[in-house]
Image (spheres, rainbow, N blue to C red):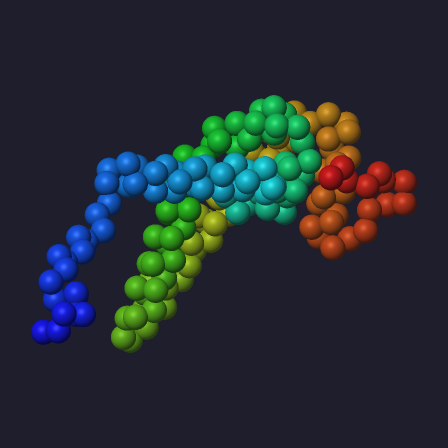
Length: 174
């Protein structure tokens, strides 16, 4: 060892340790960034629409129509749909079971045509019942609409169907 080599005699450097205050600052920064992101997402993003009770509403009650309404009015109309949510869930579950029964009938060898036809008939009944329920609930919503809301809805239905509104119809409110 030479006299100029001090590295061999110097004490080892201690490892950098994180004190609890440093950890607390990092956690605080992470939470602040998370909150800032949540606020920014809420501020810059369109309001998320509530989920409808079923697919049977998509043609006659377009989501964009519900978005055109003020929040309190939209909540009032959505409560009508929500009151029937359980019926729609039950109907969709029955429809899925009917489809599974068709699949089971298709797997028979030889094909049991009578069993398959019966399974298809049950599927048709379930599907028709679900559509009828959707139509009934849609009528309940229509009965609650004002004249101006009905005009807005008519424009949104035409828009959804790909038809132009009549010349005297006002544009939908955005």
